[in-house]
Length: 323
Image 1 (cartoon, rainbow, N blue to C red):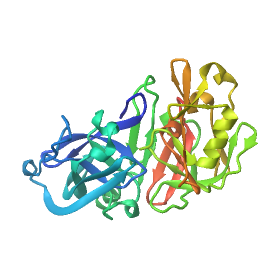
Image 2: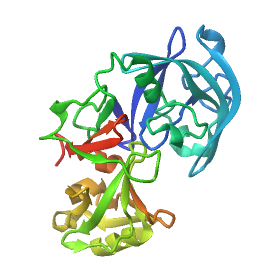
Image 3: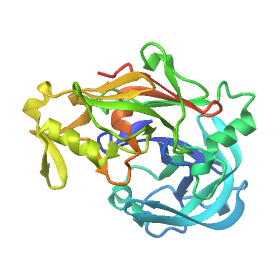
């Protein structure tokens, strides 16, 4: 795996079909569908595209597919084929061939990846399909060492990132993983949130969970929480982005999430993105997210994350390159 667009997303390769055609995908714990561009897509640019006529293991489905992102819908139709990832082959895997990705806007037209590989649970799938990782457990559970996958997300200048399938890689984290049972909302890799601190100040947050989301670049929280953090940092709004003076970064407080009784602290170096003399705050407020935070790659770079599908739990530990 490696990053694209200065750590905005992390991508890796999979194969689909017989013989397999390679696709570059975002491995996304915040969704549960697999989609790649169809050979029939006229607006997908110069990407690898799936041609069912070229695969001897293709099985027709034909049902329509639509998944909605912030910018709008992405549409296509369903098929089944063999999917290869992390050295394993999953047969008769349902996936979507996309014919219109325009709902993704600039994030897709800018290039860097072909599709999305959802790693959430089946109930989150917009088509209620069995996910590739769930199918892997069902089909090859005897050879899969553990029903676990894990992420090490490196900063762009510190080497490659890694998705481990079948266990964890202790060379990428300090000490032991802290395992936490999953929390509502169902289908997501969500764990319980006890409290949020900005330095010594405890926020009056109503959120009770965080979603670990490898498909989101930054961190998204209840607007009241995020506004309080912006105020505490003295952030100012510039062209719809909250910024702070980078020269003050060393004096800025940690942002700390208490999850299942354990503290997970981000320093200003972790939650700020420097652009020359201006530092962007990697937070976004959402009026519709009062019950939860979404902790994306900005958090997951600091903390190695592991996902136990069978036992419905998630684990965190300080990543070896975490500051």
